Structures are given as C-alpha cells and as structure tokens.
Length: 342
Image 1 (cartoon, one colour):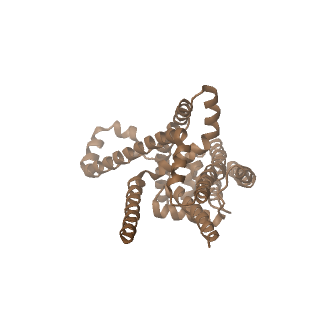
Image 2: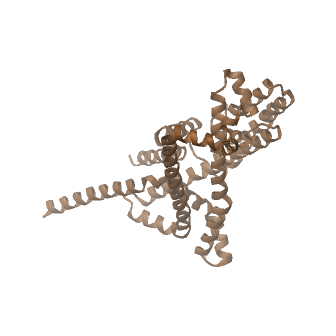
Image 3: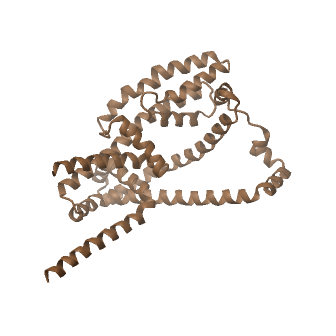
C-alpha cells in the first residue's frame, strides 16, 4: 500500500512537471508582452491606487490607465518604430555603399545619395518602371509581402496581449501573486524574494537604464536636428541604444557625426556637436543614472548587464534585451537563496 502511494506521488510529480513545461511552451511565444505587461502594471500600481480612490473603482481606474497607455505610448511608439525602421535601413545602405571611411562619415551627415530610381514619387510617375520591376522581382516581392504581413500580424497580436495583460495585472495582480505563492513548490519567503528580484529588474531596466538612455537620445536628437543632420531621429535612437555600452556609450554615434560634419566642411557644426557630446550628452550618464538608480536599480555589475543584453540578443533575438538581464538577475537571486539553504 505504501509503495503504491509513493508511486502515485511520483507519477503526480512527473505529470505536474510535464504539464508545467507544456504550459510554459504554450506561453513562450508571448513571454515578452506578458513580462512587459507585468512590469508596467507594477510600476503603475501607485497611480492606479490614486485613480481608484478618486473614481471609486479599481476596474475603471485600470481601464483609464490602459487607455492612457495606448494613446500616449503604444500608438506613438508604433508609428515611431515604423518610421525609424525605414530611416535606419536607408542609413545602413548609404554607409555600406560608400567608398571608404571618409565617404561613409560624410554620407551620415549628408543623407547619402538618393537617386531618382529609389524615389517612390518617381516610381509612381513612371508606370513602365513599376511593371518592369514587378516582372523582374515579382516572386521576391510576393515573398516580402508575405513576410511583412506575418510580422505585422505577430506585432498586432503582441500589442493586444500586452494591453489586455496590463489591464488584468492591474485588476487581479495581487490575487495572481497570492495564488502563485500558495501553489509554487517554494517557501513563501523564497517566492517573495524572487518576485522582488523580478520587480527590481523591471524597475531597473525602465527607470535606471531606460530613462538615462532616453534623456541622452532626446538631447542628441535635438542637437542633430538643430545642426541640420539628416535622419536625426534614427541617429537619436542609435545614441539611445549606444548608451547601454559602458565607457564609450553615446560617443559611438555622436563622434562619427562630428567627424562627418568636419569632413564635409561644416566646421562650426562639428565643433558644436563635439562640445554638446562631451559637456551635455556625455555627462548625463554620470548625473542622471545615480539619481534614477534611487527609484530602480538592477543589482547587476555593469559588465554582467552588458553581457546579458548582448547574450540575450544572440540567443533570443530582439526581445533578448529584456530576457537576458531578467534571467541573469533571477539566477543571481536564486543562487543567493540556494546558498542560504546549505
């Protein structure tokens, strides 16, 4: 009888493990919007409580926040991504088509060659060119259209899941956590520590790393625009991304821009770009990052953070920027907990 009970318990454990893995595999394609939604809900919780007290309803307050999120962030961000993707493609093509480093730098600040053959307006004005293009590249065009449609569908699904998950986490986040705490095969104290690490990772990425890079990107974009540098938004986005790299950081972008301006004979804008880069953009990291770190920090060394970001990119694609630091931070907390149990 005792052996039968042990066998049943062992079978139940294996069945539970298999089902949990299967459930994880089911949710894996949507992990990025779900993780982002959880972090956004955690960050918005204080604002949710304030709004709920005023309008006397947690669900209505969550609905108001979700509408504000869509109108103020999701829609503008989606439009910006589409626009920046086109500009980034043109920038890369212009640099790769340049002969030598000097011409590449000049193309960055001059917009590169943009012949009539690449102009959509010129193509529409010449139906014969459109027919010839379709005859020559019809199959490739159809394949590209299918890929674009597939990508757009996946993006829309991700946005829908993100928005809906934010609402659910805002309304029922506490109840979901209590259920997890009651049913997870971990001590409640360990679950709380891991949950705190998850929260800290989101706050650190959004507040400490994200806001610092955003401020640097905005300042760089304004400078590029004032100095008449083409594709200022694209270069500003690249500056924001480069801010993640320690020591060199934003200089990876604004130094070539200043060099391109100088090589193009625009000495005064080149000097202004260099001064703003050193005195403004370059010092923002030292001033704002410690300030933002008070409200959210990753608790990861700079090298580990950088390695986890690039490792996540190599392993999981674009969303690895989030998943890499998350895994590294959670692994660190799990090792601390495991060490404490020895």
